[in-house]
Image (cartoon, rainbow, N blue to C red):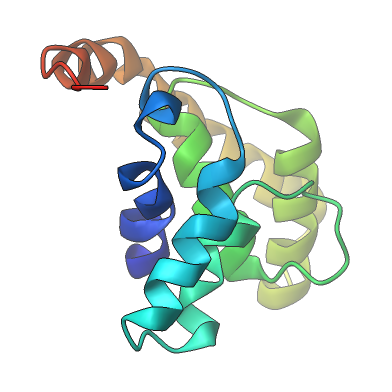
Length: 129
């Protein structure tokens, strides 16, 4: 998960416009870059799966955690993403859904609080197009 969170946007090195504007070109490009560099597909997949709909049946708990890290970094919350993540966590932990909801909500709220500061710091490094 830490690896996926760190590399999921690596394709933006080849599509720098997507550093400041929305886009999906970087996802397939990132996957190709990682595979060409010898990264195993199981790890390289995060470049592609971080942008897929959270309800996609092939997404693993790890994929959903990387998607969640990507969202909260920007201060965003997504009900469909959190629902899919909560479902996986409930199955994997044996906890009750409401318990997972309460813990997850508290953690995500705390993480999103500092997003403006993180994004301002990130924006202080202009990107050459």
